[in-house]
Length: 287
Image 1 (tube, helix red, strand yellow):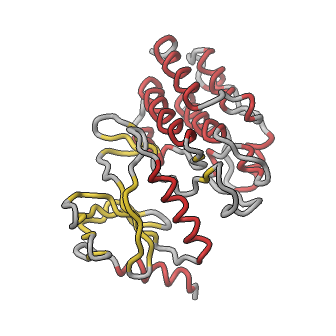
Image 2: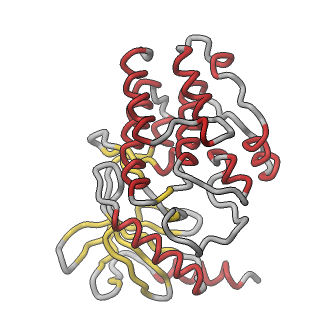
């Protein structure tokens, strides 16, 4: 018996369409499911507004709750066209939840499986950079940029989502030294290392991994086991993108390699600077 798993199942079973949480949010439809959360379309009965409501199904301890509250407070500071808007936080039926802007569309991962062009992909990453610049300006590093966390609305507006493991650069504590957080395939070397300072340029590395995939249709580093994969990010140079896609413009390859530099100082200086480079490359080098 796994008590934590059983508790998670019990929490998940408590929530069904029609249930009202905190006397305010009526669950209307399950629209997403992850390993640690459920996402519902819900109605805010107080404001008569439709929202997305994310329920965290894993039981929490005090440390996790403190981290969760800190992250929500950070996310609420971010009001930007290219960042998903977070509204409210609460607990109900033994679980934490948060409400946020309801988005209609699909994430960039889905777009990639449908054969997203390099031109459109660069446009999406340029928009993501604008959202990341806003986050970095208030001291928030996302730490888990990947296609699943870049949502493309029906109007083709990109929203950076899920600042769930973000950390304020201006706050100390609440993240254990040596704790590796992020998604291994997209993780910057300094994150994979676990004991190095992580700066906003870690998010730019992750953008570089997505750009590498857009250019080559493969990830720069792949391994079925976690530790060897992390060590590849720390130690191995990526295969040159133009070996996989000879038609790729040399200047696009150059930017990919800069983004995937092991030394953060060798990457572009900011998300804003990267966005400007992407705009220029899209106009000049990408058909």
